[in-house]
Length: 459
Image (cartoon, rainbow, N blue to C red; front, side, top):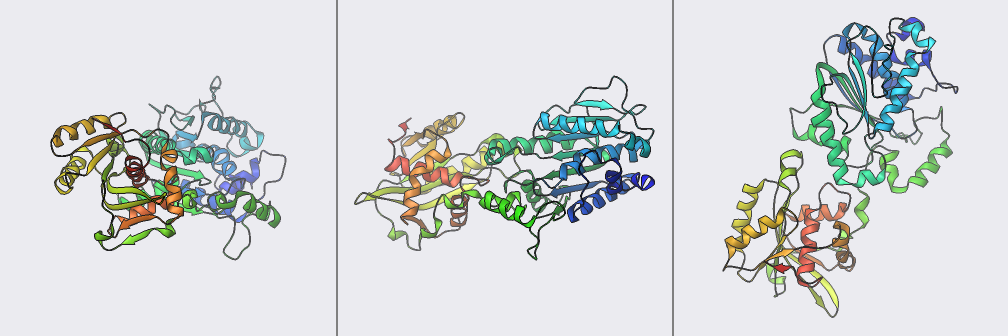
């Protein structure tokens, strides 16, 4: 076993196991260890490996990937003086991995396998330390932490999301994505191993974006996906060596709809019940639509996101009207032009709409921050042609969209049949947890500018 430990990760973990409880091996344990063993064999032959490993919580993924594997990697590849970067959602978690790796390397069991691997005296910085006689460094940083000047033969990212609240935040998902692709992936040596390991939380989290990028961009690194749902196809459970069937059943009951992500490793949108899309009425004839004061509600995309985000936000220009009939609210959407583009193409689309819309149509443009300048630009362009208003709805996106829920519940959402219908329905069905909510924001502006809150200030 001792000799095998130098060339086989599973045997290594058996030999150096650091907990008092026995090391239990499930089908996923063996599969992950075997694949990582092969990744190191390929690394020695000059071949890089990209792995996306998805495992339910409390199934030992971090023991394998973030505690055992980095220590085995530096021992197995000591002749290459490897650099390691290990990252997680926060510095506290990554530094905890650092302490565990040090403990393993300093153990008698480890010395029996790799007697030449020792931590350099005085190299006790918890976030960075070196192997004696090696030029390689072990770096442990939180996502978003500084990796400037650091190289990586092994890049480990484990638990990139802390909790459900973070997973639901588009801002945090964007930060994680940018930290991964801009900061960490730029540190890779010519030959390398990249492991992204986590229990998935959201369809648009790091794992979801990796999958989307691979589908959309043939030049994006090809990550091999190792997914281990808690429930097997035959109804049995993944890790009976540790957990009883009752434990799994209770976890499914406790997690509810989150079990799709946290147990089955297949996230679904939580927001599917926010708006009842089943009652949307689709009209073939524009003549069905009521007369009245129509608004072109324009939700502008951020130009900074356009440059840096793989799936940029949409600029949506929605033509519609809200009204009340016998005290019951209705929302009628006649048109929705949209684009994923930076300012020049975005503005060209809006210029075209200004030539199509009737002069009586009021334009209500999102008026926060840099968007105010865009609204002022269009005011100048359209002076004498139409009214341009500044829409400044208070509150976050959920507060803004809240009045629409009762209209959906009553089946009083009317849309004209057109290609944009698919995106309209998709974004409302996924709200507030979808990757995009631009159609929802535009519809909120239509409502508020016609029958909802007081109209936006005329510029």
